[in-house]
Amino acid sequence: MRRQYRKMAAAVAAIFLFAALVAGCGGGTSNEIKIGVVYELTGGTATFGQAASNGAKLAFKEINANGGVLGKQIKAVMADNKGEPAESTNAITKVITQDKVVAVTGFTTSSNAIAASTVAEASKIPLVGAAPTNPKVTVDEKTGKVKDYTFRVCFIDPFQGTVGANFALNTLKVKKVAVLVDSSSDYSKGLSQFFKEAFVKGGGTILGEEAYQQKDQDFKPILTKVKAGNPEMIYVPGYYEEVGKIIKQARELGITVPVVGGDGWDSPKLPDIASAAALNGAYFTNHYSVEDTSPKSKAFVEAYKKEYGQVPDAMAVLGYDAACVLVDAIKRANSTEPAKIREALAATKGFEGVTGKLTLNESHDAVKGAVIIEFKDGKQVYKATVNP
Image (cartoon, rainbow, N blue to C red; front, side, top):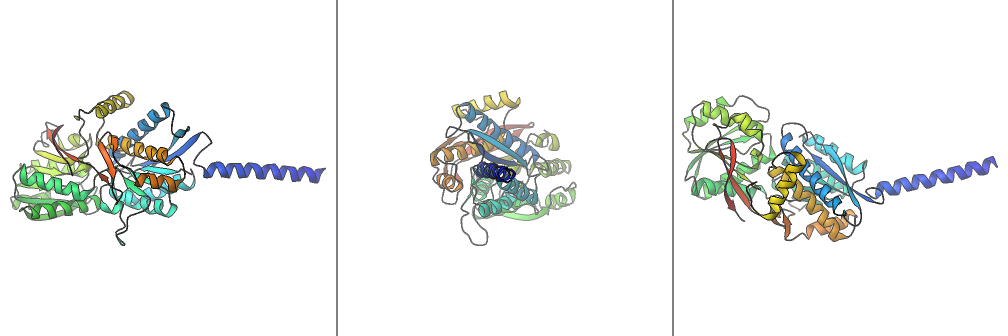
C-alpha cells in the first residue's frame, strides 16, 4: 500500500508539474494573454518611458473592458529597463523567460531597443517598439537584413532628419548651421547624420559639429566655440535632460539664433530645465501634437486625462498605438503563437492609430507623417504637418 501510495503521489505531482509547464508556455492562464511592457521607468529618459507605459496600460484597460482579445483578458507584465541598454537586455529576457509573455511592447530610445531586439530575435518573440527611431532597431547593422521579430510604430530618423533640414532651409531660411551631437547615443548620432546629409543636399552649410555625452552638465565650452562660428541656427538632436541645459546655457551666452531638434525633446520637464523664455525660438520634429483635432485623438486625450490627470505627450500616444497595433495583430492572427503574431504584424496596413493611419513597411517601420512643434513661452504649439 505504501509503495502504491508513493507511486500515486508521484503521478499526481507529475501531472501538476506538467500543467504548470503548459500554463507557463502558453503566455498566461487559460483566460489571459501575457504581454511584456518594458519601458524607461527610471533614469535619464524616465518621462518618456513613464508616459509611454501609461499609454500602453490605458490601451490594455480599454481593450479588456471591451471583452479582451480572442475571448481572453490581456495581462501586462511590466518591467523597467532603467534607461540603459544592458538593463534593457535583462528586462526583456526576464519577461520572456520567466514570465512567459507571448510578445513585448516598449522602448522609447534607440540604444535600448537595439539591445533588446537581439533578445527578441534569439527568442523568436515579437517586439513592437513605441518610439526608437534609429534604423538599426529593425535592420541588422552588420548584415543589412531586416530583423524578423522586431517592429515599431514610429517614423525613423532618415525621414525625421530630412523634415528638420527642410524646415531649417525653407521655413527658417537659414543656410549656416552648427550641430551638437550626443556621442553616447545611437539616436543622436544617427539623427544628426541624416539631418546633415539633407541640409547639405538642400544647399546648406554645416559650420561645425561639437560632441557631448549624456549626463554632462557644463556645455559652455562647446557653446563658446559654436558662437564664434556665427551660425544662423543650432541643431541639437538629443534627449531633453541635456537639451534643456544646452539651450539654457546658450541663451546665457547671448546665443539668440533658433535651436532645432528631434522627438527626444518631447518631455514636460524640458521647459523646467531650460526655462520658458530660453525656449522661445526653439522647434522640434515630433510624432504627434496634442492639438490634433481628429476624433480619435480627442477621444484619446480625454481618456488619458481622465485616467492620469494630465495631458498626454507624443510618447504616451506612441505607447498606446504600439500596444493597440500588437493586440490588433494577435486578433488578426487568431492565435497567441509568436510566429503567427509576427506574420500578422508584418502584414499591418492602414491601421487607424491616434498618431494617424499606420502601415508597416518591408523594414517593419511605420510609414506616417511628422509634425513641427514650436515653443512659445514654454508651451508647445503645433506649427505644421509633414507627410512622407
